[in-house]
Image (cartoon, rainbow, N blue to C red; front, top):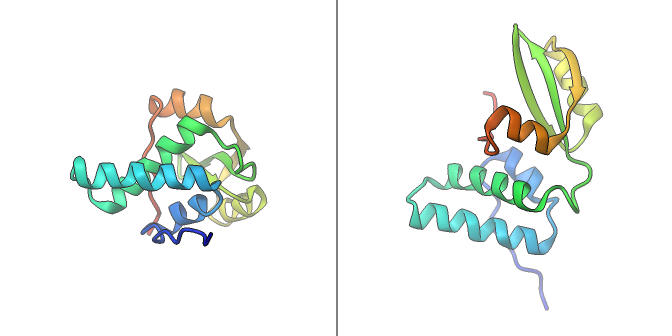
Length: 124
């Protein structure tokens, strides 16, 4: 049986994370994004971002053990970075003059900082 060919998510960061998901979680992601897009009338880009957060919150990072959540200080503010490669993320943050870079617990941070739901976005 041929593998299902899903459309590439619109946001490059979401696409990178989704590409790491096991088949059943990818299917759940697509279903959740479609429900939000069509039933809730949320634009596809936002629906995909919310769907990814839903899948990560529901299933955790099983099958995606490379995902890391980092906290860094930049320009006097705290920033959070979800990354597949912690070393590359630290390098990029350092290039942007980030200080106090630390890997933090995903679920505890998601709950404490965002009330259990966070919106993903990209910097210009």
